[in-house]
Image: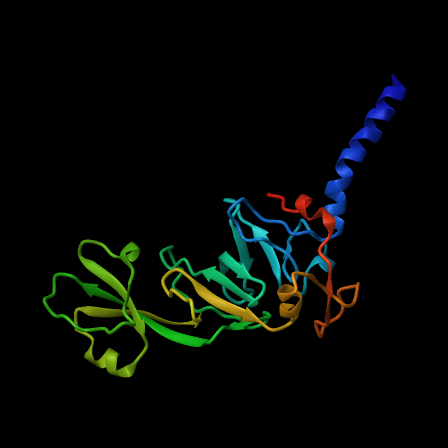
Length: 238
């Protein structure tokens, strides 16, 4: 009986070895079948070791298995997409949720605005008032924050617009958010990173890694390595 148990243990360790190797090799992972792939410079917090990513690029899966990132001086954001070639991360500001109309603060993070920080002002306008105003193409409606008596909109912050805003529109809040070429202010914001630089590796279809093995390479110097043959083992859902 004891011999049988030993053989069973050895067999179990043999089966688990590919998964362990995948973790040791920092293979790509994701939070779900339709979620962004997580790989260097990002790492899945609690599932991958520090050397799998770069400082400030920690990703985690929330309770709904949505890919999420925490900006230390701001909030937790859902990650819609990660472009490793362009080095852009697309986040959902979730303005429709309570207390989510806040500025995106990228201080103490490796991220910057893809183009610039844009200021938007939210207004709550009474729908019962006959006054109207052409808010231009910058007008972004928020039906999720509106009701039968009022409509919530956001417009690019401008002194002229504020002066000419109908009296039925009450200022709610002014915030600063990162925008980009593909930004849809209401549902998606863009942040870019410059360090570590992995675009050349991505363009060659190779994996990117820190040149230093102990993750203390603060300048983000990287090398390109061939993607492992075991890549099919590495996409795992948590």
